[in-house]
Each structure stands twice: as C-alpha cells, then as structure tokens.
Length: 249
Image 1 (cartoon, rainbow, N blue to C red):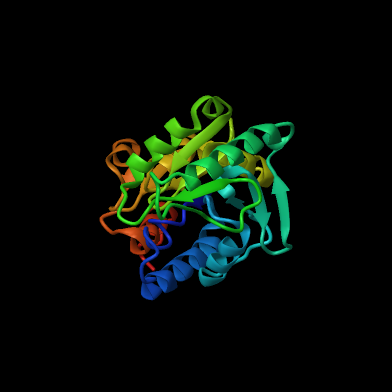
Image 2 (cartoon, rainbow, N blue to C red; image 1 turned 90 degrees about the horizontal axis):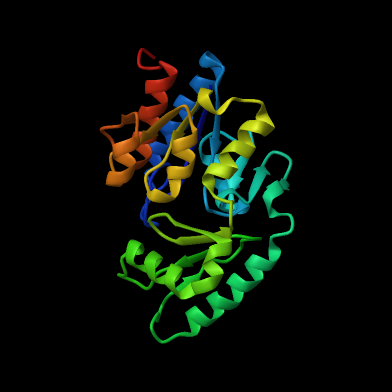
C-alpha cells in the first residue's frame, strides 16, 4: 500500500496559519509505524516546489529514498533523499504553452483589477497565483481561467485553498500520481489518496481509495470513501491509522 497526501489543508494549514506541531508529531509517529508494521509507503502530492516539500518531509520523518514526492502539481517527481528532480514525460514539447501562459500572467498581474495578486516564487514549471487578500479562491480561479482566454485550451488550471495552479495540458495531480505509481511499481488501485479541494480530485479519482480530512470541500466529501472526523494534520494522522490498521497501537 502507498498513501499519497496533499500538503495545504492536509499535512499543513490551509492558509499559511500556525503549524499544528502536535499533529505533525502524531503524523510522524503513525507514518513511521505504518512503514515499519504495515510495510506501506507515504508520499506527498502537491502544487508546492521541491524545497518546501523537502522541509515538510523532514517534519514527518522523511525523506525516504524509496518514495519520491509529486511536486509543482504533477510537473515533477522529487527524490528529496538524492535531490533529483524528474520531469513528467508530458512536459516534452509543451513549453510553448507555458511561454504563452507566462505572458498572459504578466498581463494579468499588471492589471489594476487584481491589486495584491502575486505569483508564488521558486517553481520551475508550474505557475501558481495567490489571490488578493480577502478574495475568494474559487472566484479568483474563474477569473484567471477567463483572463487566460484562448491560451487556456493548452493548459490545466486548478486551485488549492491558497493558489491557482497553471500547468501544460495533461499535467495535474492525477498525472503526477500515476507517474509516481509507475516509478515505484505500485498499482494505483493499491493506493490511498488524501486531499481536501477540487485540485486534488484528479488524484483522488485515480486512487483505489480516496480519503479526506473534515475540512474538505463538498465535492471532495461527495467522492471520498472515508472522511476523517478531524481536520487538517490530525485528520491525516487519523486517515493513516484507519487504512494502515494502527488503531490498536
């Protein structure tokens, strides 16, 4: 079994709030027990860039040399143990779409309609846009998609609780999840995916088991096999215990 988990709204707070250190310690404990007793693996699948993911992995007991992370919304696998960044095969020949998207994003951020909107730094391929303070992320997502106009047909545009993520068409968390499964030799049907927002749906739909913390959106809740009674970090620990059979520890 392989458990694959989002970061924002799952392992970490949804909106860059204070970190639940007690919850992280519990996650570290149950992941360690799962790997030791159940022989299962744990991986991250996120829109975040590799350096941030490496730090999160260190909090929860990683990195693990046998399981890379999915970063930049599926654009890369990142082996934090070795530092290797492995591009998704679908990136080949699709850089032109990103060039067009970059030009459109520059125009969007320069527009007086979006004061305070900004682009997240540190990413190789994925374009992540944070909305102005107080702007609803779903509304911002719809506006970004509309602003990209004819370029949008060459892109995958999704959102988490904190950002709108833009990648070449075909690259999303679902594609990254399948790439991860292929890399580690694990059938998707044998995996548990944990997510909380619509951006996680492509991953949740492809996994054999879909789970979510209590703070998930209604669309995620409707499709999840198991919804934890706990939110965010505590919910992730509960989900791991639920699927790995660690409740009697």
